[in-house]
Length: 141
Image (tube, rainbow, N blue to C red; front, side):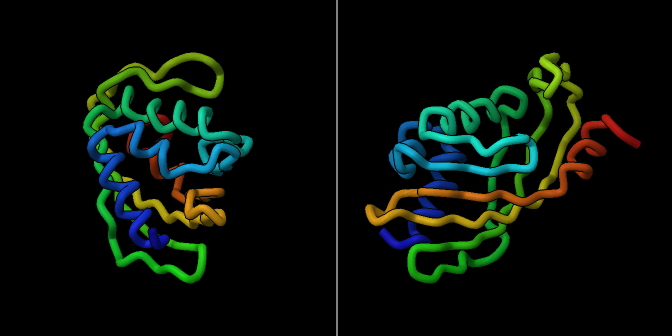
């Protein structure tokens, strides 16, 4: 499967809440980096926990590609917008939870993906404006 096809499968599986389909796209020793986590998330199992954890505070989250996927060799870059409502408890870094606010959020995310020799995700790096997310949630003014 090409990197472009993999991105489309990933987004489709995410929007369908199909964790098994997402898991099948990651290498066992994959690494993901995201501004909301102070350290890279290492290993397929840990990455699946992070992905599944997004559906609790945002049960209606949907991703939509903003532009065509750019791919070369074993790498791809893509941008999506995530639309969601904060309707469940959201774990915070200090161990507490932010109770549902009912606020609607729109977040633009850029992602760079590297595939391994088997065509599975070896690494993905997401980039987004975490301050804008905090503002939309009402955490900062």
